[in-house]
Amino acid sequence: MIAPPIVENGRASRVSPIVDYLSDLLARFGEIDDGSLASYIPELTRSNPAHFGICIVTLDGAVYEVGDTREPFTIQSMSKPLTYGLALEQLGEEAVHRRVGVEPSGDPFNEISLAPTTGAPVNPMINAGAIACAGMVAERGEESLSLLLDAYSRYAGRGLGSDEAVYRSERDTGHRNRAIAHLLGSVEMLKVAPEVAVDLYFRQCAVSVDCRDLALIASTLANGGMNPVTQERAVGESVVRGVLSVMTTCGMYDGAGDWLRSVGLPAKSGVSGGVFAVLPGRLGIGVYSPLLDVRGNSVRGVAVCKALSADLALHLVRPGESTPPPVRAQHELGELGSKRVRTPAEREAIRSSSARAAVFEVQGELGFMAAEAISRRLTDATVQPELVVVDMRRVSRADRGGIGFLRALATALCTVGGALVVSGAAPSLELEPSDCIRLFEHLDEALEWCEDELLDRLGHPHAPTVVPFAEHELVASLDPDELARLTPQLGSIAVEAGELVVRAGDAAADVFLVTRGSLSVFAPGSGSRARRLSTVSAGMTFGELGYVERGNRTANVVADTAVECTTLPYAVLDRLAAADPRLH
Image (cartoon, rainbow, N blue to C red; front, side, top):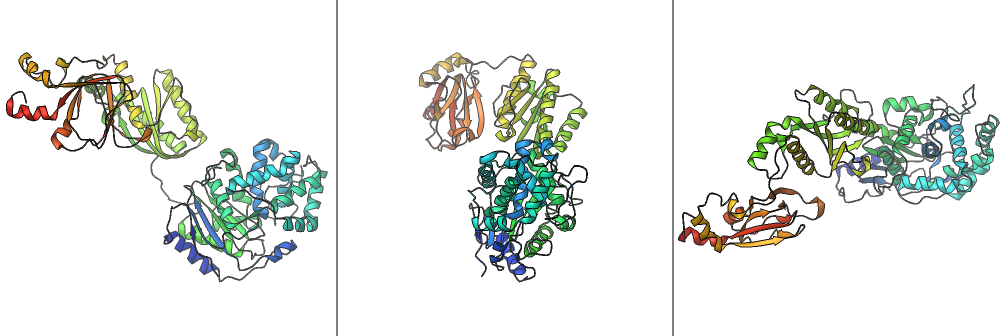
């Protein structure tokens, strides 16, 4: 009987079209009864050939699963990419690749494929290479098994352990693997005893997982080594590139070429009936069905992956596919502008020199293509910008080249007296502020800094921090007699920095004439995520809209500095309309 669909994290409902589609695949390929159970490991012959599960995990943590996705089985050869990655992290690429290559063998998984000159296994996905990698991990001594289990568990997002019955079955019958380990020892590809290396290999193959775990392992690799559900890092991003590369060319053994042509995804299979496949930067797939083809791959698992690739256009090689341009928009500073209210003189100064500051809104992946687009636009500009803002709030990830480009651009700008300003960069990108790089959480803050910096470079005087009441823009045109009639009817407030002056939802009753300091107006919200609507300073006014609308306050106003305001009550304005219409 087909188990009901399971959807997690509130990202999809039980009527999700994705779940419906996976259920259709389950029903369609569940009718396949070709293949046979793995027999060379006696314990695997106990598997139920009817078990069948499919799971997909996206990079934002949505889990879609149908069928027997929580049925436990042993990971077998699907452990090989994980142990290879662990060895790379422990020893580094150069040391690992002295003892195991990365070339496809075209041979079955248990073939003794060794390089003729060095005796090194040709790749880490065949048994010989996997045993060599297990031997490298085993160099950590007694902690090697716990180290391996901890790594696997981070991929799966839960604690994993070994199936002792399967481990004993493999240990007692694994004579060919034991012979391979001794052969590796004879050509000095192991620094531990062959029995130690092969025993850890038997242990890793006997780790118990389920179909959901496979999809999470795949999505973790798709996400650059970060588990998308737990947000825990399982492996470094640079290691993931090497692991996925070898999976692409070697993960399906002597069927790797046909797999790459028909499915086009890095993948790994195991004789327990599991297959996991990775679409980098998008999602991970796990399928479980124990019936195997002659190559040792799950018959239903291969069929499901082929259908997914064809139906959903998941193949890595998609000729003619276009992606959104990396630069979403480009602006001059005067075209965009921050939420700080400027004086007319400041606005004109910024507008007339705004070509000296360029703003780039980047989207998608910050890599070579984004770097090239920004670099070309800067080079082609009639006026070379001194200040460059790169807004990264829509950047999903950045590779080493993209981050390196930002640092190089900052250095280049610095040498000519400029600066790079970055907003919205995720903490995971590990950008550090410096004399050449300014970091801001929000684009608005970055724009304000650039405006202030540009005004400084122009030698433009800063707006005053104190404006006498009589010189305030709202009353500057009154004659002394009018000012004398108005002043006794006014109030005043004085607040310290950080204090709330106006609260959203409160009744509106006054117009505020700022005579000292500055205040920011925020949309209702809390903390740093509240959206700034504007910032006003000495000589400016706020609250006048409430006089027209006669409703409750629609925003919060917070003092940025120590602030003094003269207040003009709406009631006073109403009285003046009848008693002193000219002054009104």
